[in-house]
Structures are given as C-alpha cells and as structure tokens.
Length: 437
Image (cartoon, rainbow, N blue to C red):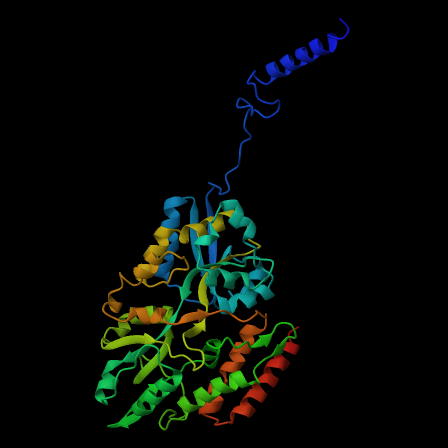
C-alpha cells in the first residue's frame, strides 16, 4: 500500500490541475483565459478638439496646397483637428517663436533648412512614433528616407512629403528666332554652354541670354562635393572639385553680352533667357501662375550633367515634415503626417505636380496628369538623371552654402580668378564657423 500511495497522490494532483485549466488536456498555464477582463487601451490619437499648427520655412507650399493636401483630408479623418499654417516672417522667425513658447507642432521645410532646426534642438525623433502608429517605412524610396536618417545617426528627423527633381526649361521661340537647334536630353554642361554662346545676342536693341546656370552649389552637388567636413568643422571649398565647378560658371558668365550693367542673374519668365535649370517645384509653381499664361512655346530637357558624372543630377532634395519636441500634441501631429502620406493624398499631389517620396510607380506615371500647363511637354526629362546622395551633414552647411554661392558674382562682375575666389571663400567660411561654435 505504501508503494501505491505516491502514484495515487500524483493522479490526484494531475486531475486537480486539469480541472483548474478547464480540462482541455493542454499544459497548465498555456491556455489563455478568454473570460478575463481586457485592459482598456487609450487611443493614440485624441478625439478632443485641438489646433495643430504647422510652421513653414524653406521649400514651397501655397495656401491652396495647404488646404487641398492638409486641411481637407485631415478634416475627413480627424474632424476634431483644426490645422493652421504659420509662415516665417517678421516676428515669426524660429528663434522668436521658440523664445515666446509658441513654436508650432509641425515643421514644413526643405532639407537645406534642417541644420537651422538642429541648432535650435527642437526636432523630435520620429522613430518611436513610427513604431507606435504602425507606419510602414518600406514604402518610401530609399534615397529620400536615407536622407532623413543622415542628419542624425540616432534619430529619424523627419519624413519626406514630396521629392524634388530638376530639369532645364528652354524657350523655343528664342531658338527658332536665331535658327539654333533645340537642346536635347542628356547633354553635358559643356554642350549647354556651347549652345548658350550662339544665343547670347543683342538683336534690334533687345538682349538675349543663352543660359543662366543658376547656383554654384547646385552644380557642385552633381559631383557630391561637400561644403564642410563635419569631423574637423572646416570648409572644403579650396580644392580641385570646386575649381572645376567654378570653371564651368566662368565659361558661362564670361560669354560676351552675358553681364550688362552688373546684372548677372536672369529670370526665365521675365527676361529673354533661352535656357534655365530649375527645380520641379519652381517649374510647377511658376508655369501654373497666370503671369506665365503667355509663355506657350517652351519645353523641358534633362538638366545638364558634369562630364565624368554622367547620369548624375542634383543632390537629393525634399520638402518634408518634422515634429517639434515642444509640441503638446505629438501623436496627433504624427497622425496628420501619416494622413498626408497616404496613397490617396499622395496621388492627388502627384497629379498636380508633386513628386511622391513613395516607391509605387503609379505616382510617377500619374505625375502632372491633372496639370494642363504640362500637357504635351517632356515631363520625363525630370527623371532622366538620378539624384545624388547628400555628403555627410554639418550644422554649418546652410551658411557655407550661401557663402559659396557668392562665387558667381565674383566671376561675372568682379572678374576674379578662380584660385583667389576659392581661397577667399574658404577663409570667409572658416571664420564664420569659428565664430559660431
């Protein structure tokens, strides 16, 4: 009897456990208790009435676009959220808003302005919000998302709302007037300058300019030339790469007739300018403006490339959204971002003229489809050259970019030699960096 007692006791214990677990025959502790009361989960997005403010500095967005891409779609999904746009201006600089404690929840900007907000230490890391709200980052084009990650190794500083590509617009009437063949896709800057020499003419008292190459740093970006070394905090202007860029500009601005009365920059829509490289956002904005209604005989070709850098366009550029770390409504601000990045809103934007940051090819196929100004035009020229990645980021980049931009005037008006310009610009940049630790 004593030998059987342990067996009987074991049987009793097993039966007891089985009864406690619902006699399911499964191991104790492995069966979920479906009847247990569930813990109430608070919604990530509040249903309380609130105002989300968006600050605009850098990039372009019209009141009409803000209404169509932000206000209307957000109101459909979140009727409790009112959106308000605050533009940079007198009394509303980033520093003034931060000091007054009234900095908005969202920031709409373009990547050159990111260092400004980094210096103010006001950018919220989006990684936790992406995870919390279940946003699938794999739907973004890698180059746009990588750019957002490149400004801080430990943070996702923002999300691209629309990408920016570039092309060269040309006035067919000017080419026809002087019997010069139209420019073609995949030309080099040398080819474009050769055409410009044939079209920089004074005829009947009217001056015509063949080409304004625009900004020095934009051409440098096609070679992925850095402006500042973030490790040493020294400018990187006085070198062979930038010398080559300045030489291209020298060839363009020294064409006889290019500079008149110290004027060295031209507007395609106001001056008799035959060719002008432009960002897509500028093209769309200006060509849909009633002021450009009389300009009919124009078209696009791919932006010229630097020889040796075939297929390379300007650096990756985006108009983006960031959340501020002083916002009291971070979840709701992210919900706004997520809605504007939805397929529905992105398609509306693409058809009107915003290049989507999302991978799906349907956005590119439908690009500008609802914009009559671009009907029959070579829109594909915007996508012929690939965007180049940004060099390693520096908080001094924005100011040094402005400094190096001054080389164009020094070449065109002051007629300084390239080596002198590079040396003086580097000295100016380094002094500015040293005075702003």
